[in-house]
Length: 309
Image 1 (spheres, rainbow, N blue to C red):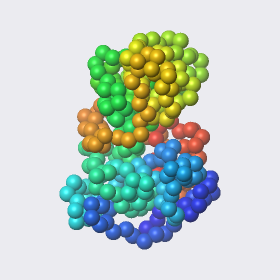
Image 2: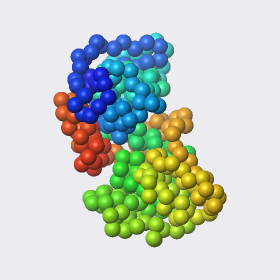
Image 3: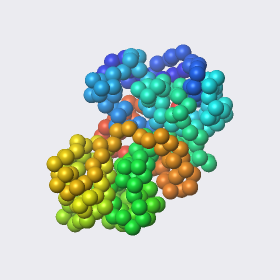
Image 4: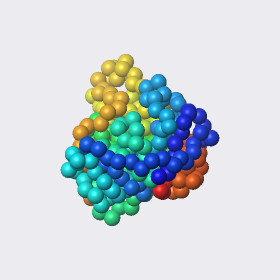
């Protein structure tokens, strides 16, 4: 089979398509014939070696995590899915998978769920990492309730767009930031207030916010403490927390890293019910994987970047 691999850290020049032996599942593993794999910023970080101190790769390494395809074989201990099932999930090698950007992927069964309804493979592949991150933040970290005022930075991004939809599904008043055509996108997703961050500072307008989801970090995160009401809650998926600012207002602040059990199943329910609609920006072939990584790093595509196998 073919797989997108690297044998050393570096820029896109280290990417190559390798012919590797077919895989065989054992124990609680599932073998998937991959139809689509989506890129995340983590993929670029892993390829470049920026995360090697905490998340070293074993070379040769097959890249990618978000994956969707059809189960072609299962290990003897698997009961969750069966051969022929359309599934999606997380195939990162760091989490026990074999890597997503390949014609086959081995994944622990617990990392997979059946694709709901007639959702396409490309749209399903776009959701595991971003979708579960949004569900964890909105449902578990912030526990968003009807009538609350919620601010989500970066509403047109992969995590942000899912979070905007989910917060609106829960009956919240949602404010967010975006720029360019992202402004129209987040309005379509249901955002009540949209601030174009290139011309309009959200922190000059928002006050007494119940909950904040930060997907941007930096100055945006720094300003988010001030718009929260006393006792409010902030979750960041990217930045470092300021405990002094949090303590001054009695805020609950969370640096989201791990996810609760059952988050993928919960995401699947939201996708099935239409509460969250995936946003695929562009698809690439395996042969054009380097161009896909360039689009990821230059942020030239609005919506998820998906590689079709």
